[in-house]
Length: 268
Ligand SMILES: [Zn+2]
Image (tube, rainbow, N blue to C red; front, side, top):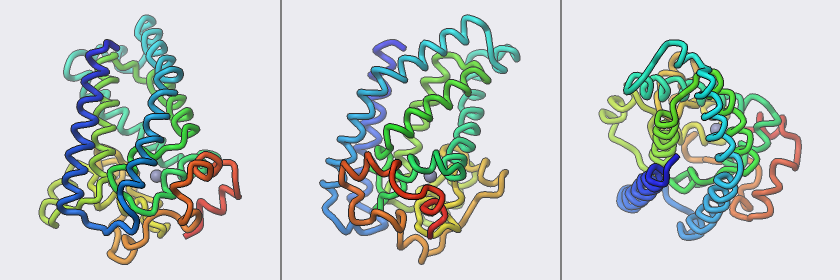
């Protein structure tokens, strides 16, 4: 991937992060109980750390793997002879489908939940929550992408566009904003929305065990996991555990290795 693509991704990322910060400041839907600056400092530090180590290791490996798959002509996309815009759109749809199942498995499989729960221990979901992932979860998700690349065989351009798109969508649906019902209804014809994704971050298991989609809402509709969060459920976000310590670096890093994963996964 050339430097231009990396730069472009970075520009899109900061433009979206900045715009959503402004939107949240003007029309936030949930009040913050702690100064926002604390959340920004902690989550930006996590993001910078994760960006540096992944760029130096697993991201490089995944790009090298993409070249290997390309050189061998592996993958359904190449078997079908897809190219140009069709291949890019196909990759976005198929990888978003894979991503739905990967996210769902992160909730279903106790070992994966140990890492993914770190994202869910945030008690105030806003745009900075998008930056909050345990390094272990990122390591395993790059492993999952190695499989997706082998199965589908995307071009480098399609893969880069998908990666950028999924980041922008994640920033959007984690943000502390909400739309009027008629807009919400229209958005839901295609997309995951901030209201539905806040439902995925509730302590309540009813809605937390649903709304797994990142870009297209069709996956939740198709596999019966679309959950309409009610007002009461949206009042308590995060998990029952670790509510007072979710911004402590030591607790953040050690969380996957503590406690009984299956218990914490099922606790309301
Ligand atoms: Zn989740």
